[in-house]
Image 1 (tube, helix red, strand yellow):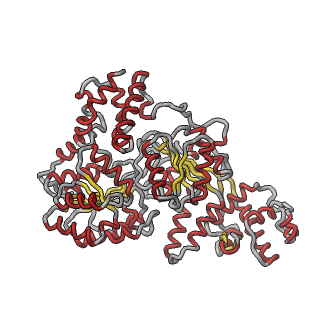
Image 2: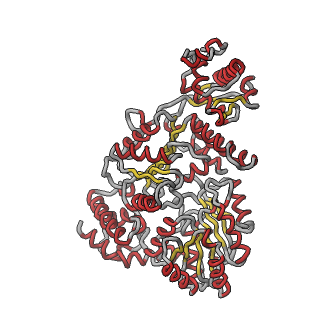
Image 3: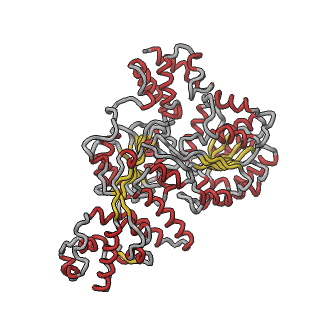
Amino acid sequence: MPVLPSSTPERELSEILRDVFGYTEFRGHQQAIIENVTAGADALVLMPTGGGKSLCYQIPAIARQRAGRGVTVVVSPLIALMHDQVGALHEAGVDAAFLNSTLDWEETQDVERRMLRGEITLLYAAPERVTTPRFLSQLDGLHERGKLSLFAIDEAHCVSQWGHDFRPEYRALTVLHERYAGVPRIALTATADALTRADIVERLQLEEARQFVSSFDRPNIRYTIVEKKDPTTQLLRFIEREHEGDAGVVYCQSRKRVEDTAQTLRDAGIEALPYHAGLDAAVRQKHQDRFLRDEGIVMVATIAFGMGIDKPDVRFVAHLDMPKNIEGYYQETGRAGRDGAPADAWMTYGLQDVVNQRRMIDESPAGEEFKQVMRGKLDALLSLAEASDCRRVRLLNYFGEHSTVCGNCDNCLNPPQVWDGTDAARKLLSTIYRVQQHSGISFGAGHIMDILRGKATEKVTQFGHSKLSTFGLGSEFSEAQLRGVMRQLIATGALSVDAQAFNTLQLTDGSRAVLKGETPVLLRESVSSPADRKKSRRDKPARGAPSPAAATLDTAGQARFAALKAWRGEVAREHNLPAYVIFHDATLAAIAERAPATLEDLQGLSGIGSKKLEAYGADVLRVCAAF
């Protein structure tokens, strides 16, 4: 463990936490990480969304600036994230700035001059800018004068080809270690399995860095995965019955589905906005700003939306299409419930999801080694989707974390029945084999199921497939059961889909073991979505009910909380910031409960640092005095 410089004892770090950010104690590994980085050592930090990663480099940046160490450069991939982080730091009284395309030339030069004078504590910039000759030349000047304090590399999983959001420009960040070897670096991410973690270490040359891995568990999130039937209707019922009036994110794979889903939700009276790369940049920015600043907005988006979104009161994240891997699923679902209050991660998936994801991997121009890794990651997600045991145990186990059953996922709350699908699997594969032998061509899933279930459709009759020995041999199986069998056969490689031939089914080398009965196929019974049931599985407050943070307040406290929220909204609009940057709901609830009469009464409340107390204390007292 590195020894802290005499100028930044542990006491001073705690004072920064309290006086600047308004918190009285560190959480989890925060203190150890902050001490390590402040002392000048490298660190790799894995911490779940909402775990307080930003403080792990913001507090060292402040401490090292006070000790005369100069500027901390934060590598951040998104403009929206830079704006919100810098806005929040300004609210806390910290001198921060960003360099990105939203600044004109004069504004850019002003920031650069302030940076070169060492006046800025934290400077945010994208990896593309950080590695330009112009910016590196400016860093050289800072370094020569001993004013280059720290590099913080946020969303570090972007550097890894095994990660869910690989960005080639992150690879160029190795120049930071090669050019400024004595400047400490901290790399941070919310999501990385062992393979991705090793790649981050190698690509960023962090072999000597101390690794801090927090628990990946988000106990306030309830995981639910349902069989896809009519996904848009299922989603609509889920929102109406469990999240009416709540902020949420809905992920779809295609731009068209994004547009169609957003329109369907709007037609149902739900305030929904689309977001995808095909929209004009100004429209995307407008929609993102509304989502961050207004309450109760549902953002329907492709994965182009979300990284670095700090909105704390997202009550649900829904997937209408299956992501590529567990890292993507975990990262996206982790945007729900950042405030620690109950939230939902809801996903619908079906056979076509499996087919589409397999096809995208197989058609990728990548090498076979990469494809094999991606298939393994997809298989892990499929295993999670098909699981009949605790979702959380499986999810955490993927990241190398052992846990006990959670009691707060769909499988724990409503344990599904399990059935042996081995016989159905053998009959399906036999039917595919006989069809190919009989006709010399392959067919899709629907046709194969019709044959096995004994449905003499026009197509079955046309090709003479009603004469096959397997015709009607699986009449006891429902279509939902057979689709489940196909999903698992495709997931395990015992069956493949030929995308070049109209998604027809093909036997593989792995089919033989199933046909011989050597590989069992166990599946969960098809269950209806909780949203399809007559009664919701969770008691949902009525529309207009208070935030979960204020649920325990008495009548007068609720009135104060509502008034404080209205006041906060006005301030946020004046400052052009999301409301949570001014104060989180939890801070407003604590104020409402205490009913302060003096500034001293506000001191010590979580989220109220000295700058915010000075800036807003009198207004808060005025609002509370009205009640």
